[in-house]
Length: 86
Image 1 (tube, one colour):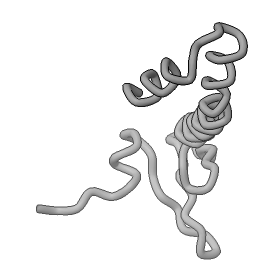
Image 2 (spheres, one colour):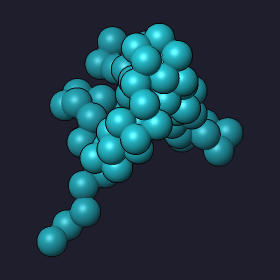
Image 3 (cartoon, rainbow, N blue to C red):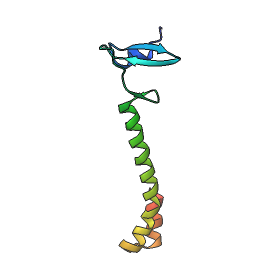
Image 4 (tube, rainbow, N blue to C red):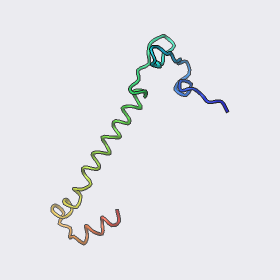
């Protein structure tokens, strides 16, 4: 089974150009396609948003027991049951 190149998996009509050791992906009209760290801009920024979402959820998770006990008034037993289920 032949291995497809990176460019054919991106979009039809793109071509790879090797200049000074770097591979650039060129569009049909000759302009360079914007890439960040070897990824397209959409993929790069989707990964960045995913990173920040993961960081924010990890920051909020330890505050849930404090919220349950101080604001809602849940007992330690109720918090333990909720944490056990989660």
